[in-house]
Amino acid sequence: MKKKIFKKIALLLLLLSCFSAVACSQIDKSVIKMVDIKLTEEEYAFVCKKGNTALVQSMNDFMSEIKANGEFDALVAKYFKGEGEKIGYPIATGDVQNTKDNFVVATNCPFAPFEYMENDGLIYGLDIEIAASYAESHGLELVIKNIGFNDIFVQVDAGYADIGMAGITVDAEREKTYDFTEPYYEASQKLIVLSGNSDFDKCESVSDVEAMLSSLNGVGVGFQSATTGSLYICGDESWGFEGFTNLDGKAYANAQVAVSDLINGNIYAVVLDEAPGDAIVDATNAASSLNLGAKLENFINTLSNPHYTEILILGLFNTVKVAIIGLIIGIIIGTLIAIVRVAPKYKIIYKILDKVCSLYTLIFRGTPIVAQLLIAYYVIMPSIGVKMDALTVGMLVFGMNSGAYVSEIMRGGINSVDKGQMEAGRALGLTYSTTMLKIVVPQAVKNILPTLGNEFISLIKETSVLSFIAVYDLYKALLDIGMVKYDSMIPYLMMGVIYIVLVLIISAGIKIIERRFAKSDRN
Image 1: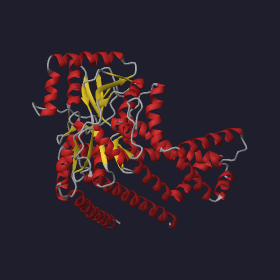
Image 2: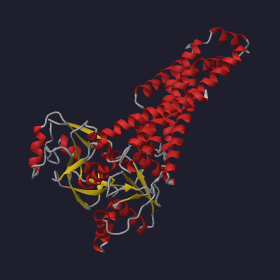
Image 3: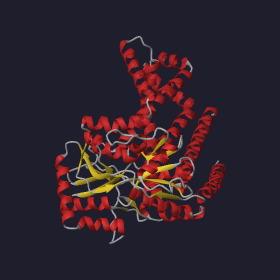
Image 4: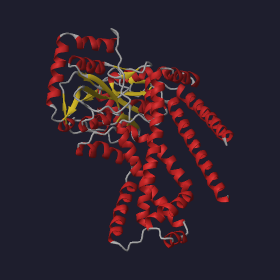
């Protein structure tokens, strides 16, 4: 059995290596460039929860102070001109609760020079040093949460973070829902295209670029979701952006993925903020010249840092932990529901419970698990005033979701047990519940063991959505490692390998248990 597993893993690694080599050879031929024309004029500010005027005023006063004493100009020179020693800070890998002693900052990497990560595992940037300076001046402990850009607003609104600092543009729609500090940086959007694209070489103004974009039909243009780039391409009345109905706007979770799609030839261009755009163009062009061996070496060098090794192990541990505990909770809930569903309905209480169980199953099987996570963490918990860390919420939601599926699996297993088993138990004077739990259910579990194994495998794979509520799972850990070098090829391939290895281990474990059950039957 062990030899077969190792052979499968070796074959998988060989196939992925071949695929990587092909993909790498395609990417090496392409580099990108930025069209040096500003498409928009916008301002960055920090975002706070609506009504948190005390923090907004405090931050405004602090910004006025560091602008007056020259500290802000020194930070700008440090990160935009390379003048001075940059200071990095650790990122929280757990769900830190918002308390009066913490200054919790929600941000999104990579977005250099405002926030980005280095090989040492620390986060740097203009926004980060401002946050650190503010926390120190107010006697607070700085806590940095690196999450998705969209999640920043939800975390701030739900009270899981004090402030959002990620090159956030102020606009009228956002001001209806959130409070913003005074703007601190003037920004703009620019266009990124392949280096061989000469369509914009003769453009001298915004109108020239827009005329060229308007002449294109059906081509894809990427942008990071919920950013000004999306408003520019899709149109926004409050900004005065008419949008481009002739273009196929494509939203991405982050700019790096959008640029990767551009290099792969799936889209025509990417609209991105100017300063981060410069950084990602330089980093991507540098990475594009590397072969597979060099990319693998970069990944290994990054993992040699204890911080990244730690978060990879933590991500793997959280992934397995959520799946295992979720399955245990699911088996308990599913078994109870199945017993209710198959019980005789001669009592009114059983009829009511049957309806409740049917509704439960409908809700959790009828909605995606990511929606259940978001509702539980960002809506239900803040509404009832319960502070629960994201990992615990994830385990509970996965367990409740699994319970709905296991209930149907278990119901089928119970129905597959000969009815004479129940009759024999009742004839011996056992109650219905005792007969069910001690005689019928154990036989049903043996019958449905392979299906339960499939449910466990599904839970393992579905844990990748835990990052939506800022849990450090395997996906999030490898994503952060990939962001360091602006190259996610090796981390993504490694992610696929680890998930498949986990599935192979689970499958082997299920087969061992099945053989032991079969052996006990023969005895």
